Image (cartoon, rainbow, N blue to C red):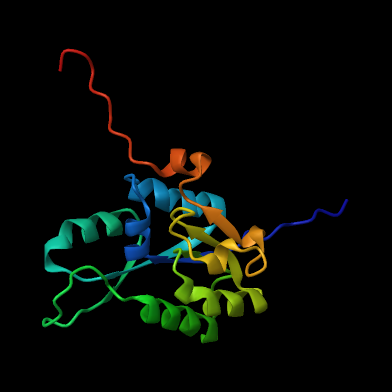
Length: 180
C-alpha cells in the first residue's frame, strides 16, 4: 500500500506592527497570536516590523518572548512625529531578499497588514506561488486594493477581527477567584 506523505509547509510571516496596532480596536494577546500563526499557517518565523522608540522596551521584550523576530526601522532623532514607523520599504525589501536567497528555507509568505502599499509585493508573490495569505486587522482598515475580489482572490484574504479568529487571539483578563 502506497502512503501519500504530505509535506508540512514552512511558511514565514511579515507583520506590519504599526498597521496591526492601528487597525485593532481591541487588545490581542501576542503569544496567542504567534501560536495562531504557527498552528493555522505553519509559520516557522514571524518577522514583526516596527519603528523603534526608547520608551517601548517592554513591548519589544513581550514581542520577543512571544516568539516574534523584531525588525526595526530606526527613526531620525529630528523627526517630530512618533506616529509612524514607516516600515513598508524595510518589510518589502526583507521579503524580496528572502525570495532571492539561494537557501529558500520557506514555502510561502503570510502578510499581516491592510496597507495597500504592499499590493505590488503581494501580486508578485502570488505570481511566483510564494504567497499564502494576507491577514488584515479589520475590513474598514483594509485597502480597497485587497477588498475588491478582482484585485486579489478571496482565498488569499482573512480578517483578524472575524469572531472565530478574534476569539483565539484576543487578550482575556484572567478572572480572580471570589474573595481575592
